[in-house]
Image 1 (cartoon, rainbow, N blue to C red):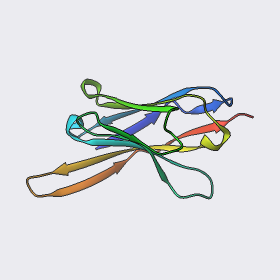
Image 2 (spheres, one colour; image 1 turned 90 degrees about the horizontal axis):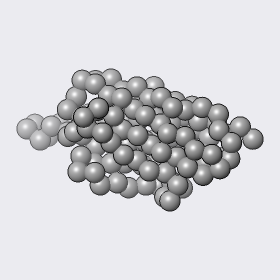
Image 3 (tube, helix red, strand yellow; image 1 turned 90 degrees about the vertical axis):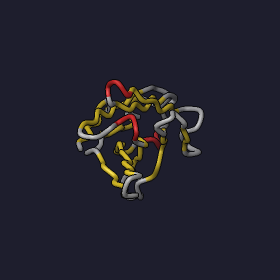
Length: 120
């Protein structure tokens, strides 16, 4: 299983970015996908999550500004980030949660991350 994030970069406060995470090697449509972020000196935190049915949930800091979506045909998950703030500066990671009901095993896979930096 491989996950590859892209779309990070330098952005001014109030700007927008769209992150993408292309996956391979798994049944993408069946998996829960999520975006996490880790700022310097802080723990990794959940930003947004989307289930196989398209249900979403967001951290308080992301609500109203970020939107997670998925394209099962492209095995890709997106994070649209609007009205960015300096405190959004972090490395953003994509995570795939894979669950096999036949043996009740689950696995988490992570991408390498993409840097989002406030330019102010």
